[in-house]
Image (tube, rainbow, N blue to C red; front, side, top):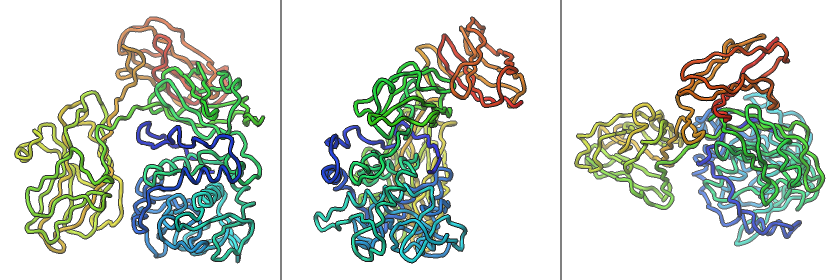
Amino acid sequence: LLSICFAFSNLFSAGMPKDYYDGTDGLTGEQLKSKLNDIIDGHHEFGYGSLWEQLSYTDEDPNNSNNVRLLYTGWSYPKSNHGGGSSQWNREHTWAKSHGGFSTNAPAGTDLHHLRPTDVSVNGKRGSLDFDNGGAIYTDPDGATQCYVDGDSWEPWDEVKGDVARMMFYMATRYEGENGEPELELNDQVNNGSNPYIGRISVLLEWNNQDPVSDWEIRRNNRIFDKQHNRNPYIDHPEFVSYIWGGEAPSLAMNSAEALTATSVKVTFSKELTEANAENINNYTIAGLVVSAADLSVNAKEVTLTTNTQAEEFDYTLVVNNLTSTDDDEIEANSSVQFTGFHLVEALVSINFDNNSIADWTIYSAASDHDWRIKDSQYLEINGYGADAASEDWFISPALNATDYAKLKLKYSAYSKYEGSTFVVKVSKNYSGNTADISSANWTSFNTSVQENSQTWEEETVDLSTEFAGNNNIYIAFYYTSSGTGAGTAALWGIDDITVEASSTSSLVDNDIQIKGYELGNYPNPFNPSTAIKFKLQTANFANVAVFNSLGAKVWESGNMQRAAGNHSISFDGSALNSGVYFYSLELNGKSILTRKMMLIK
């Protein structure tokens, strides 16, 4: 299980629509499988050549946005380092394309749910083998893989066995032989050859339970839904596996937790819960927060917790006990999952070019007859090669209002082929919106880090906060120039997925208290046995400092009293406590506005 916790944006992660699996309740076996097929087919289809770009997004390394994470090894390779050479990554058909003869043709041959980045030589060693346990450990020229192989089967490393199984369940559900598509099935043998089968299903069922759904899979499923517009039901509902193919049902576990607002957290479970235990607030503890309500959803697999105000972008740990599923399974004691305190992010503008429209953006050419244009309803492109003159071309946003925001970020993807020209991002606060005034406006330039002739899509983030947050009438432009019209003086550039994210540095606690202007910290940290907890109040107020252990139990508080505006220091003595991690919160009028972590080491 990839034990990685992801802090998903509350706006930009394309989560599952609430009605996506409508009509599946009460179904099992072939009826459920058929209904799921109806739900997930008819999705967007990609050309095989575009998969470099798509996989660079779906399998992006969460620890390095310039890299992809490889399936069978967990290695992290640069997005641009793809192809067929040694130490490069390529496009692995997890359901081997020879098992059904669909080759690289859409939809099965380009379906993102089973296409994964893999090391070229590791992929070659797996070949078209079925999946099974056993064999000899495979050591690649680039390093040990923790995978096993023999003459008729491949066993991936433990971290992705469940991922592989759920991809196979998806393929056997999505492709039922309709409309000329392959009819793919799971069986319990190896050496399936060119037949449209993958085995062994008994082993895949074991792997599905050994390696439960991870945050990585959920993230990837959401990203595929962004692009391909369908989902893997066995990631969203792991219990569907046993409903269709039998085997041991998955155990009750937490799949994820996500802050919905500054005072609510959605917790998702692998099974339906019994209402009495699910809505008992004593079964949930969050260090640094107080859970005041727990509401079970209609589908009985989600619980919304009401808390006091979370600290923005702070990593919390939710600990759960005494929950039971409707089939009498009990969750493991002290089950835990992390989530990040709510941080409101809004999109001031967001555009891709899938609908062949630039919306209210402006294309303006100051020189040359080769302008920005939409390419294949997928992205915006410009190429000054062969133009009538050296290029100077603008792609300009509508006016943006960031008056109410303290943070402002531009995000986009860029691609380059050939060399000799580039583009810069330009931002202005005094452009009139009339292209006749473009040269008289003041523009701040931000260079792109995407290299010329990169030949791969790369994501860029530009922090505009310092100069432009808090301002109205902001214009953002992509400005392309070339020094000529021939080879070496004019290059091709593409841009896509442009978004301007805006957020505040403060969360509202009530109508007149904001975090901005308040401070909280301690010194020394780590400490033994005492430390000074220091805080700053923006205005005079009733303030209290509370300390919690890692299970969320309050172990000390300073006392709620009227305190003056300015700096304060309170001594905390941990002599009576055990070594470990503790959390402390600054509370105003009984509401927590800031939470920090400290460590007692004896």
